[in-house]
Image 1 (cartoon, rainbow, N blue to C red):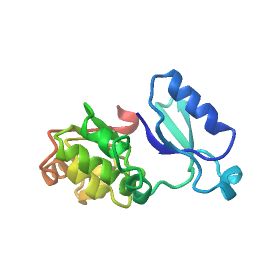
Image 2: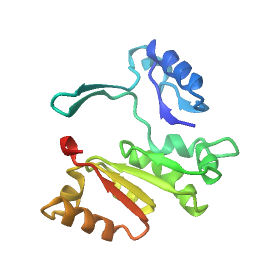
Image 3: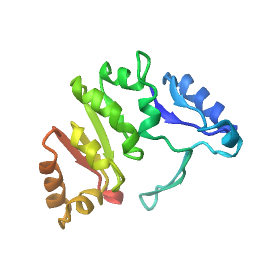
Length: 177
């Protein structure tokens, strides 16, 4: 299941249909924040341009409507993402909307559900989400940014040491693999 928010644009129905076709539950994919702004609110999209010759990728991200912790907390009950997380085999957070993800991560942690967090760059609430993680996938630059340590190895080791609940961590090397 995916927990997110779509806009009021034509892409929203396509996004939902593609997720359903791929077997992803959309019961927690919320619509626009309010009906008045629905038609002007784009759904979040990311276009990824891969340059195989250079070994690089570029992401062009258009943010969609915000998703806040209060939106998630309002969904509490039997059919909520918080309840679903407590019964999941594992949960994954991309680190973008960390504050909104916290109630879900807290429920997963309380139930012993493995929590994978992607740490691309510093974001509001990411430190709290990482504190609940059992596994971390970090970008090439995140460990150095988060710890202030020079060098990939030293920075990655320092980040892992600062997260005692993390059983494993991987750090990408950007264009180097």
